[in-house]
Length: 313
Ligand SMILES: [Zn+2]
Image (cartoon, rainbow, N blue to C red; front, side):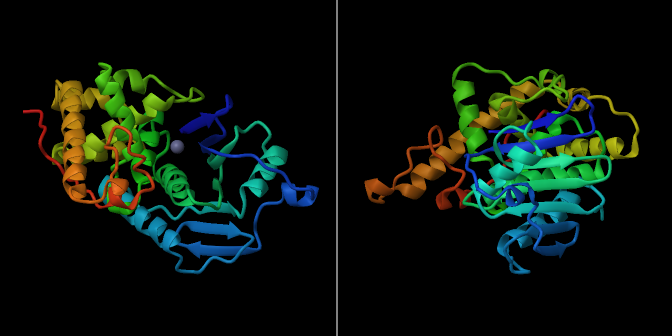
């Protein structure tokens, strides 16, 4: 589960992902940042103690993500450096945090914002792709838009942490939303907007934040325009009224429309999964969207999206 934390001073902002614990014997190694190698690509300065190929697939994806966020969200491409420190092992990362940031929770990755630096800390491993896409999304956003609301910041990071082939469709969050919908849960953007740092979002609030973002970016062009105009206003310091008010104006029944949108999306993906698996040996079958791990399976990446079924008219 991901979460955004900010200190009471408001100077630091960080975002993080759950992790394991370890230790090393060398105190100097415990406190040092990985910095033997630096790979520079656009805004990114990727620091590590092991060499990364200049055109590493993940680095290329992060560059494409920058262009996609700029194009899709209407954001100007910032040239503010983003320092990404990649630790080779979980143990090395854990020891660094223990000595340098003992107040941080145990996580796999963090985004940290100070008055003059944007920093991502992450450990290399099986989940580094999701982790870096998520944390670097925060960094890209913060380099272009000051004071972005917590829910929108996290919702967009949840959207962009997905492998690019999934086009923002976060199966982990959709799985949670399927559970919530079965129990009668109702979305409420005003409730979500009331969360401000240093408050932390819980699992269900992350899922709802992703749902609103995915709905706004994929349901109707007018909804995407709302997000773009809102981000532009935030960037230019204009009217920062809540996005929920603008959505309400364009779509008075937005919560109900979102519920139908999600229900249709869950049904559609369940049918696609069932159809695509028909005839395959039982041992290869996925149990369905409600309990499919989704996040790291190759099959989930092949699903198609771009739905326009639900509208506000
Ligand atoms: Zn985050």
